[in-house]
Length: 398
Figure: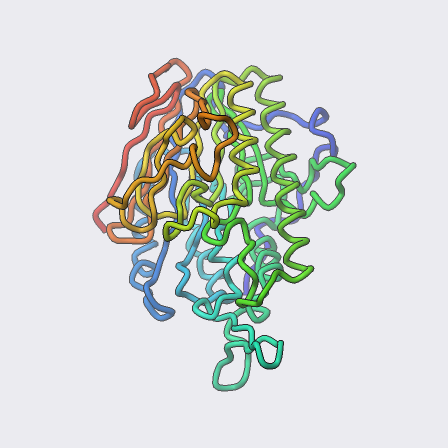
């Protein structure tokens, strides 16, 4: 079983204005820094495929060997959608992550909570005859998945392990601002979202949001039922509203503090058509609209990091006729997202100070993104640099 990282630290006041800024130790606002970004790993093609899992300690060691790395970001999905959601597996990832030398900031992915209800992940299937769930069980009749794959229970499990000390990143050497501690008192349930954090590094504000991919923001009816349950509907509504409020908070702070740029990390590829079904990204529009509006008002570089669709991609989807690409083929026929599912103006979005990077994951060779932040840089919006940011794909030999 897992153990808590540290006892809960004394928190700052609930209101953001009463909290101190947080910077990675020894990284002043005018000093360049390096961040390792990973996601969708380790993956397996079947419940028993542990090839990537067994290579992961060496992968972590390879990142540790780069002495410039002072922060690790994980964009979600600690196992594939064909692997089971068990407490033992989550604990094993926790144990592996303790080897990171740099603090780690993580946002949960769909595979470790929102999609745990699916039979292929060990959950179960809605029985149209009985109106009940036929859960997947082992030879002794026990649920294969934690809590039978219940997404809310699995998210709570993830929180209890990786976010046991709200206000501290994994590794507890980095203070962050957690929505669980700094929620708006007018919305007390926002205190549940300890996974949503913001912090500063090299004069840049980074913020995480719990937006799961692959399931249209968790709106695929659980267990394949005909419609969402009241519990699921409440989950979607509460988390979506909390995410939007946290995004508001982050940009308000970024503007007030005069930071040079903003990094947003969430798991969902909100522009991936997921099998050429535009309706399956409809519930992400609320977040895209908010990001577009905030980025435009901010007027400085905003970099979005996400996983979910597995294949490295560097683009600006918030311009007119920006294409969507279906998972997993990078050569799939392009469809204009901004002029279809996400049209909020006659000609779609037009946000030139935005850039998105999809972190490569799921397949060998294991890969991490080396993200440089240089407060003195001001690069044009390009494939491997933008504003104070530059990045390169790293594929260590394991």
